[in-house]
Image (cartoon, rainbow, N blue to C red; front, side, top):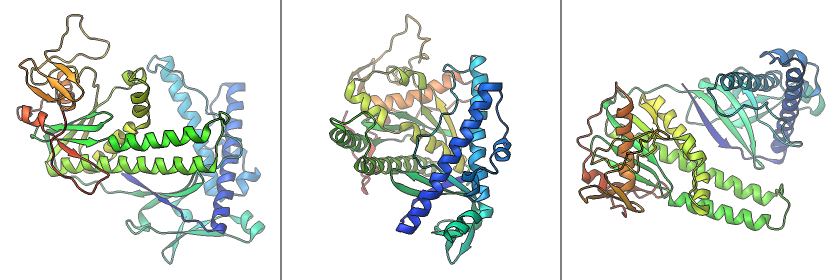
Length: 427
């Protein structure tokens, strides 16, 4: 298994000039590769092979100015993107995909692109990673390499590749390194159901008698501030307007989102490790969310909050700790009553006579048929597990410990705060 760590590069004027140069050449070489691949497809309907671009562009000035292995990796990435287009197109023709795939497009003029260096191109000198620039740059500028600080949380020997990533006038270094999986031998009979939302970003209920909510109001606040700033700056400007200030606040917002994703995912995984939970079921439905209409304000918050990235991050950590991760359709889980044992239909397949035994009487509050009041999001999270059992003949979790108390008083966690105190969630 491989991990990826991203660090912001603190640049001097000289280092910044070097990074801008190599990322600019990477951008131009990428467009060269895309041009050749597109023309080949238009004229012959053929997709180029993995090494075809390298043979074609060995004498290209953008290829020669970069370190050879880095240039090869750029062209191979272009070839892989066209190969992916071909595979997706095959699935579309077979009816396995709803939307038709499109050919990779050119990058915008004047941009900067990712550049990748394999491990064998790197050297460790005095705790600095030496990155070569190639013979052409040495001949032109009398510079043969540049150096970046080696992180202290993993070994140089474990690095598989290093990436320079330009984004919003900043440069990041990404280390792809080998990561040993940690088999904790967690109990596969214990399960944690996750229900994503907005104010309550993630609601979790387990069959070991625990429940918690990761608060999402801070993310809404971050997005609200960002959207107001963007609206003010772009007022009266053309549609494609961009500025240094926009880049700065966008990068700040993106960093906050990445931090939130990592912290929230760690909370979920730590809960599983602490409570011997070996299975996570994440409620998700792509097709329903594409057409959902939550109103102007809620829709903006829903789209801006990176719940899909959180789902993927949790799945990555599950692979690391040998926790089984299952993505489950969540349609009708919030409408059905868990305590009443309602049958939970699938989106588009609801029987005409189907009716829930309970009712969501207001935001955050669900009433069962016996007039018992429970947290609506906890009801949804518990139903995510129960719906999985409806469609699976293999998985059969004991849900007897998911009581009214578990569904009524979940622990509220604020990942942006150092304090994690027990409190009753407002129903």
